[in-house]
Length: 245
Image (cartoon, rainbow, N blue to C red; front, side):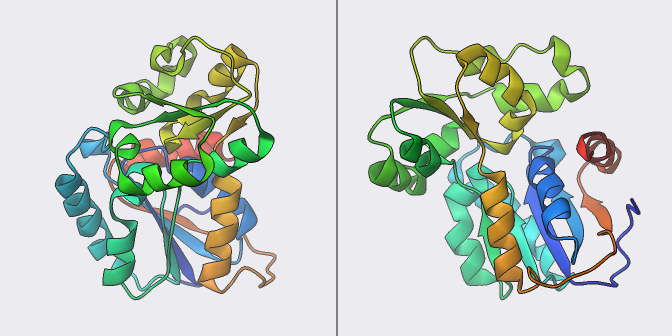
């Protein structure tokens, strides 16, 4: 895959605090080959989940100011924390459509039973997440994981030896919701521990992003070009090449 954006096709931008959004990028590249993609990260300030709301908004606006200069067809906030704290503010400020990621609480609720939601601290206390729980989370148990995203970011190249202890709690659950895109990197460990389905919401977000971009139904035989324009370029590129199979 050509990892340099050449502007030949409509551009979709994805933003995350670090490597978590690469999981959404992986799905988007496969589902929306009609577009080119750029990935905007802020690895040097990760994790956002423990930051005050005002700082999260400041960093998100700084990233989207860069994205706006690229004139994208659409963009995605590939970070549950940023979506929870300021997706409405971002949509109000920028003219291009912006998709967000939310914990897949509705999917777990539709499955039924008592389910676990793993989140960052900021997401857990955000009004939008509380609203989501009010609608679909009657049987939800929320577990805040203050250090899990940072641990995954730090140990991404040695995850076989990384034990995500914060994700493991006692109890019987029918499913687990991963409320941070970073957590997807240890989804198999979480699934094996609980022995139940694990929801991350990436496919639904990619479908929504394709729809709001206006290019979802276009056909092409070419592959998307992917560029990395912010954050730890080499790290993000390497991880994406490893997970894109």
